Image 1 (cartoon, rainbow, N blue to C red):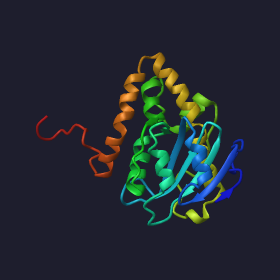
Image 2: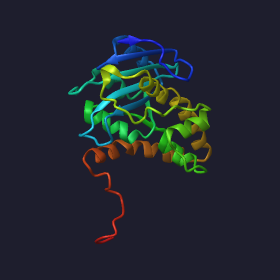
Image 3: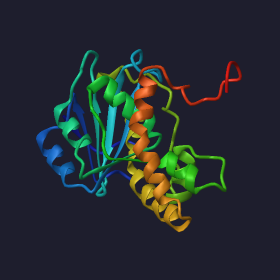
Length: 225
């Protein structure tokens, strides 16, 4: 483990650590008391089964941020799995469908329960066509994220650059306040229960993606209706 302040143009997190393979016992216990955890992942690409998972980032309500470096051939992370499957801790993602599938495919983790800020944004921010993480965080939290390292080589886990680590940390630090503002908006517009039902469908959609059935619900112009 290495501990430091994440390099960034944003204020430094309260605590920042980088782990190899899994959380240590101290940070696992720290996160175990959280009401919710912001989670993000970085992979070599977008195709499950071909593109391996390289990094998992986590942040709690107290701005404790960590990055877990995953190595080629790794198939489990026991402490991370306990957290991700803890029914008392909500896991907050942006586009949870991808991250949930990646965690299941690479580490056999069945994430539950789930909140997706992208789904919540599409249901709540119907006045906007922009539902990317950068746009959601900028409007709801007032923070401008730097996305310059979004498309980069995450497979070099032993030698990730300061820019990559800063990007990874930034992507989780503002998810929880964005989540809370979206919940307020959804309840105000009487769409909260619909959102909860959508979140409950995410593991099914993730499994369909992993098995190459991602187009299952799309309308086909050929054959019978």
